[in-house]
Length: 277
Image 1 (cartoon, rainbow, N blue to C red):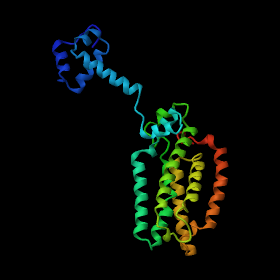
Image 2 (image 1 turned 120 degrees about the horizontal axis):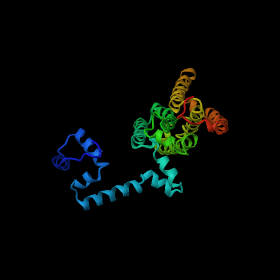
Image 3 (image 1 turned 120 degrees about the vertical axis):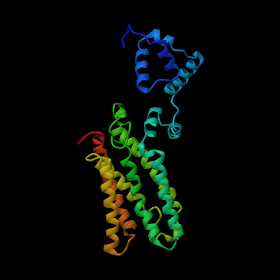
Image 4 (image 1 turned 180 degrees about the vertical axis):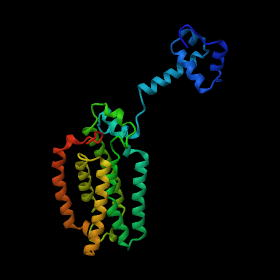
């Protein structure tokens, strides 16, 4: 087709009646895009066209914010930051539902087996891993379908990763904290239902520090495996399966947090999981 050629009347009528196949439609629309005479020959309802354009402009010009975005904005988070944080893959419905189901199953198991400490041990061992999973799926080309688009924004890289990581950790810690409050108190041997908190914080900070060297997925997987191995090894070596959650171990986690915080601050500019290392 060229500028000197125009659509036959029969072809125009078939196009308007949706009587063309996909290839023909693309060919006709390619010509219509540059030929005003043929566009004018295509029948249409002016009111319908005006309403359609108005609806498109409303969606494009004023996109409806997500509930999480609205909540963050009400808390004082700037609109552009709230939108980027709300788009975190790890804050999607699927991930939140999975975390909620895991926690609900753990609490239900503990309540159904009040005298069985294994149920509480499973909760305490699994709880610190959940924030790690959130960090792993917070940012990066392998987990974020719009990573390339966001990488072109001024907020991409370390700042956006940290913002999303903080948002994910806040949600994960809040959900796990609520679940811990529902644990049956008499079944927590020698400790508290909050014994997961310090190890979770230490593991999360360690994952962020490791993400300056490797991808968050690799960092989270390595730390989750190391944590599971350490919990099992303590039980086998000492006979006390709850040793990783006793006060001496909690003191070690606190010391690790104190060391990891300044290290993360010093290496914060290297937090860019989208770049090859």
